[in-house]
Image 1 (cartoon, one colour):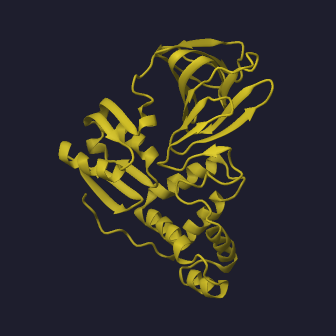
Image 2 (cartoon, rainbow, N blue to C red):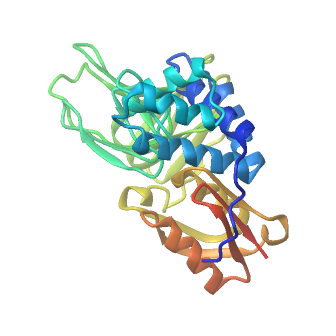
Amino acid sequence: MNSAQGAAPDKSHLQAAVQWYLILNDSDVESTQLQAWQQWLAARPEHASAWSRIEKLQQQLHGVPLDVALPVLSKMGVQRRHGLKLLMLLAAGAATFGGYRQSPYSADFATRTGQRRQVVLADGSQLNLNTDTQVDIDFNTNQRLIRLRHGEIFISTALDRAPSRPLSVETPHGSILALGTRFNVRLHQDFTLVSVQTHAVEVRPQHAPQQVSRVEAGQTLSFAANQAAAVRPADPDINHWTRGQLVVIEWRLADFIHELARYRPGYLGCAPEVADLRISGAFLLDDTDALLANLQVSLPVKVRTFSRYWVRIEA
């Protein structure tokens, strides 16, 4: 893989990284703040380098006395009032790149960026969590409810002993009622996409619950809070992520890189001059560095690496 000399962050970049770290570890962090952080991260390679320094601090300053650690942070440009809180977060192993969503109180089950997880629920249903995903589980005598707060899941429902206890998935855009089903649910910013592998589901938009859409095996449906789109054929490869694969056929390189970025912490971008190149294949998600290196063999591109957290595909 080609590399470029990483741009060294100055004190202002490090101070900004500290402030973002403190914001992202706040229990009341909002989605707009997460988007603003991602924009800041992608703006300059120095920002990614500064964030990398924060990650390294967790290892370097773990267990170091405050009277020793604070002068170190001071030399980096960290103000004392921020330094004390930062040290407490670092000592606690608080969230870092791609993992800020996962905290002890944030969700019943969660994955970090690049991580996948399989959970067997109390009723025997199997729940697969894709990268950077958060779910809450609410099972009681009347319902089996899975709340998808972020990310993507694949569910294989079990036959419940109480037929009056339906299983459903709830997102900010509405609800999905499982009818003895295996199905995939991905939460986007403005809509939810459900794809059914076996049997069927019923979809109800949050603000239009009277609009019920039935989605059969081999079909997919996107829906927003106010309405659902038309049912259409599903991508047969949509749940290959459960096996650690990204399968694409004649995708634009820009779309492929955008999808792959979900599985890597930091910034992964694609230059406009190579955005329309086409790519097909089955790619392993557990080693994205090797995957990117192989792009240089099959396509007229180079991988420019400023740091672990700043990678750009160029001509």
